[in-house]
Amino acid sequence: MKQVNASVISSKETMPGVYLTWLDSPEIVTAAQPGQYVMVRCGSHTLRRPLSIHQVAGDNGKARFALLYAILGEGTRWLAQRKAGEKVDLLGPLGNGFTVKPASRDLLLLAGGIGIAPLCFLAQQAVSNGKSVKLLLGAATAKQLYPKRLLPRDIEVITATDDGTAGKKGFITDCLADSVIWADQVFACGPTPMYQSLAACKPTRPVQISLEMRMGCGIGTCYGCTVRTRDGLKQVCTDGPIFDLESVVWDKLALAGV
Ligand code: FES
View 1 (cartoon, helix red, strand yellow):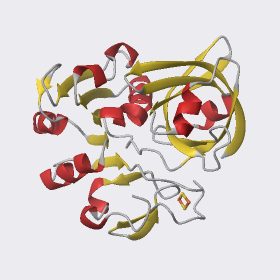
View 2 (cartoon, helix red, strand yellow; view 1 turned 90 degrees about the vertical axis):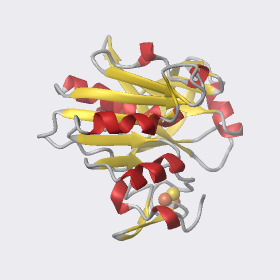
View 3 (cartoon, helix red, strand yellow; view 1 turned 180 degrees about the vertical axis):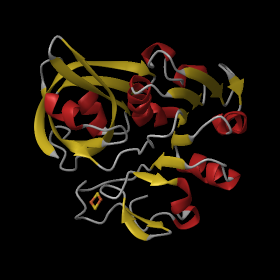
View 4 (cartoon, protein in one colour; view 1 turned 90 degrees about the horizontal axis):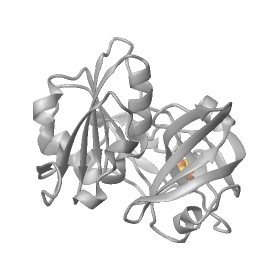
């Protein structure tokens, strides 16, 4: 984990109220694993914002990575308004990241809305390691669906929207049953209710999920991100944010922070 000043390369609105910001930082890119995050200092705001590492790229000797985030307050608004060349103070990469077993060949990814944020990097790395990737991508409406052109090539994508304006009509978790048999492992990111319904389905394959929680410090000292698991209390910032679906006590998840 390092503190770095990364230069903004670009910042664009990709879906309504959701921004994609590319930053130049070889230190982060070299160390980052899918599922990890950075703590971003947003201007004069005291608390840093945790944001998943969304994609990495390298060209012309440069290493850059992207953050995908919704504008939820002044901090994220500040980040979205940064211009090319401006510096952003980051701490990272932080957290444990996803674990892909070497023997796993077929990976099923399940993204609810902005939950695509950490899964895109996972898909990218999995494809380059020769794995097969199927992505179930859901959103409330077509406009809120992550653009397919930004996804890695060579992955299969199945979409669903709550209102039926793109893909299948309904929740993306409804598509799970058809694909879970195919997969060696399942990786999911989305809102807590999505995880709760996933847990209730009792998938027949191991599922890793990325937990989103309000964070104060990001380094395990404030205890603001404590959750209940079957192995006792855990800090999302350092023990997570990736957990086994079945290890989390979903009906009594948080002690604080949500
Ligand atoms: S954010 Fe402070 S302990 Fe996790």
